[in-house]
Length: 548
Image 1 (cartoon, rainbow, N blue to C red):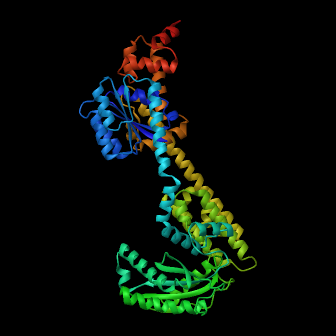
Image 2: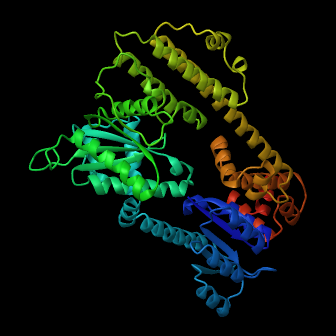
Image 3: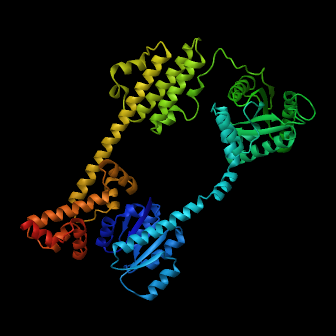
């Protein structure tokens, strides 16, 4: 939905237009109001406005001056000028300022709606062009190195794809890797002065190192790299096929050749980049099913055998087997983590992650002793739950039943299923508490809004004024109010004004002019117009019917 700004120095004009035009049918989601050019510029600075409707004749900054600034600073915004003067010079100036439309006041609802719909269609057409396939492909190509790097990082963290999905992904990224390929791995750690470089310079050095690797190895290997969370440069390599063989051109075994290249890479980096690196040549395995396992094994080897040493060269222990007697529960640590999901309030995703964690424990380790893995899982889950409860300003004892709090202090699970059930119960408690807190907050907002409008009905009850009173962004306030009440905030203000006007017409002898002012309309003619639109009779006709 688009955002629209109404600008006129007469409050009743902007409020009448804001309240009586069915903006949602024009594709407008939020209507902002300004009583001067200066106020309009302030709103334009703070909100992503799409369309500006402004009067020409205003004290201070005129509408022409406003749209001149508008098209200099926000050239994407479309403008519609309103004027009570059928003056050709104004129309000519409007055209030179690339104004979308020029309407004479008093403008009819139909003409204004038609104009706004046309400008909305133009804006949507423009953004459709921006999002065209050609431009999307260009942007994709520009970001291809980053997309390749992110995908490899996901595979290193254990993300899985079906064979067909993987094939589609590799084709999209233009990578010559496929399920079942025999691949090797190499890790490079930048050291010496590399480690002291600013992030931008470090990225340049990483680029230079990768260029050296590609220059040396591209004749014998397909190469794919990324930088991992440990700041290692990780390379996955696959021997190029020569005459149907998967061995490199000199017939040397790909593992031995990779070790020879790795030593040469280390020398070239020192010679040409004047910096030191440690290199680990990892194991070999099936892509992508063993990729995560190879990576974990390489990282552990790097930590154990290199430590804080500088300029080292290590060949990993024998290839990791597909079976391990002891393992870490990796789904606990795969991004997005439990902490980040709970922080974002993504409770459904948290539940899916918990089920994934326990599905792995129950399936992969069936028949084995997983008691230590359950300890690892319990402590991470309990820590994540305590973290989000405390971050929300609550105590465990205030939010959870005593038996659940006791579980935090003295866990009583004996099986993976019991621990999983406890985790889901705690998650549901946290979710219910968050939902209730949000409902309470939203109810408080609605009550505050209605109280403000009730007491200020004759004054400024525009969306910006109400939003300022409750200290919320106007767009957010509109969404909250509509979600809680099912009625747009501007519709509520309009309805309240009309209902109060009808009450005064029925119960007091006040003149129509006085009643109009009492409900916030300084122009009696406009009040009569909006009243008739709401009740289908004029104020006087309504009073006459009420007295008969």
